Length: 238
Image 1 (cartoon, rainbow, N blue to C red):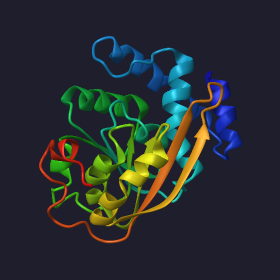
Image 2: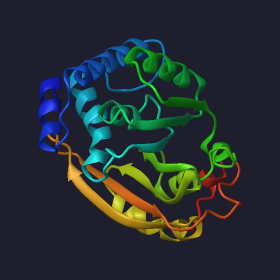
Image 3: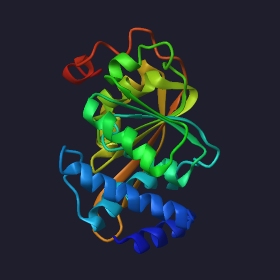
Image 4: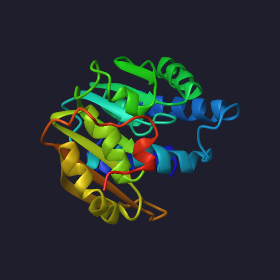
């Protein structure tokens, strides 16, 4: 997917990018490729792949959730900024927080934000489990996102403690999303979430399956969650 195909595909979904936004995506691509030479940010570096499998894929969350009203969004384990930075480019009114456990990636994100001229972005070097225990951040976000970080039962424990009551946790998944959601049903119940909808679609051109799962936060998360760093992954809630 070249930049013009990317623009046209988003326009079909009602997202009309300006020249400035197109330029921001071009700078994002350039910065990603340059930094990728000195640290491992992505296995994909061809322009067509980055625009399709990172940029378009990230923005696909907006096909099923309205980001135009802005709000506070927290992106857990965003790596090179996906999905929150592409969403921020499309919806500048979003206030973005990214938490990632690797300090080098936070360095990249700070540099990227400067290159793109982004405001209302904050990057934290921390484990999601510790971040979710911090009273300054716990249950303060309207939207919490995660893309391909861990299976749903684990992801719910990392993301729902950060989601405010009546807020939404958006999990971006590949194939097997329905199955993962079924397995995570008791974890969602424990953590105060309720599955609202699941949207499955194929990425244009290469037709690989993607799913966007929307989980509504119905009740406060019990204080004991998230458990200490590493535990959710070793002993997922059943």
